[in-house]
Length: 431
Image (cartoon, rainbow, N blue to C red; front, side, top):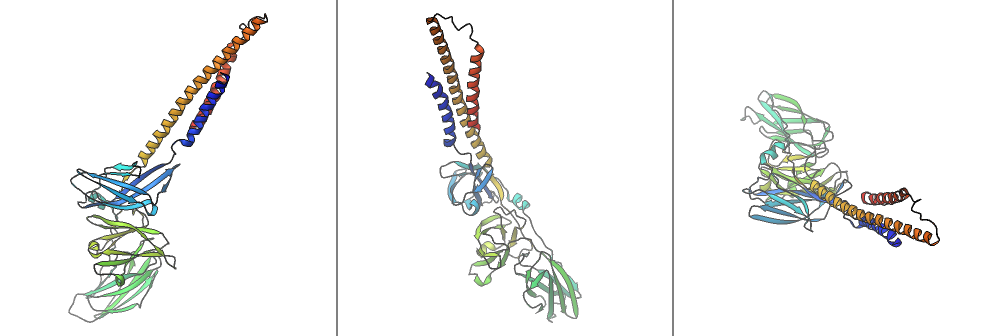
């Protein structure tokens, strides 16, 4: 009996302490899904990111395999995805517009990482997009008229770009050439400042912006008139630049040079249109000696027709420097970003919390049983010792010790045992 009085509480405390090492970890793993409109009749496209969280600190999981389960009425599909840069991976699934879109993301063990039925109409998606429209007014002097044209709508520091001065006349049958001269503030001109053009033609100038405020001054001389004006060129601070690389283009394809003003391992892109989101992904950049980084992007000419190319340093495209460059002569940008449609973080936290509570309840119940058993053993041991003392006193002819014994000392002893055992168990369970 005396040995059990020590073995039972020590065993309970030892089991409680060891359970901390073998119990499930506090960290959680979850996924979040972003994408374009879900009402596209052909495809639903987007990106999935896998994250792990420990002590409220999230870290992306790269090179991890996950499965995207898609249910659309009688149709179901399973896509194996492997995360890449920053834990993201691009996906596309055929759409059955007559049925709701049910998505579930699971890990290799089949555990849920995110689940839901996202809904995003094309109208809402376009309404949330940012459009940068820079009006280039027509300037007139007599029969002469001139205005600026920028093929990709905006410029980015410090990358070369093309600016066209278009000259027109109210008398188109007059074929006298005109002389166009430009000067810049906040940028450098990469060619001669003077150009001679026919009426209806354009003078093409190569410009490298050096600051975020660039002024172009233009003078046009022809038909006995002189037209002068100045205009601020549209610059997006921190934007990733885009320029057509026709020298490397192939039949059916067009190449674009994508350049970042600061070194980055990768950037994100997505081809979008007024009808929805097309393909996308990440582009690995190569650092240059001037502190920038760039990469070539090849697109199908048919895909570029009527489309925009969204370039961003963030996977969701929500950065202020994100730009949706027009690829087919549009006069404004379409900075459309992917919407957050599913996030498994809250569900993962609830599951982890329930798991922790189950462990604590189990340890608490086990500890309570061990405590009751310890107190019972302690009481039994004390009563047995009291009887043994009385028996020996009776053998030597002494009176019984019952009259001088106080119950207070026993209560205090039991309380001390209860307090020490409970305090130790609570510390182990809640630490």
